Image (cartoon, rainbow, N blue to C red; front, side, top):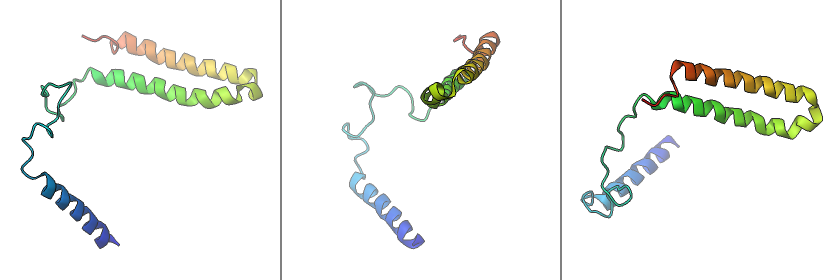
Length: 108
C-alpha cells in the first residue's frame, strides 16, 4: 500500500513537472497582486508586531467558540450560566487590559 501511495505521489509530481516545464516565465502563470507584480517574496517574514495582535484575535475567536454552545443552553441552565459567562468575559477583558498596558495594542 505504501508503494502504491508513493507511486501516486511520484506520478502526480512527474505530471506537474512535465506539463509546467519551461512555462515559469509565462505571464499567465506568474503570481500577481491586483494586476501588479508582487513587491515581496511570497514566503517573506511578518513583522513581530503582528504576533500580539494575532494572539488577541485568537483569544476572542476562542471566546466565540464558547459562547455559541452557551447561547443554546443558557435558557435551560438559568442564572448560573449567565454569571459564569460574565466571569469568563471579565477574565478576557483583564487580558485585554493587560495587553493594552504592556503596549501590545500600540502599532508603532
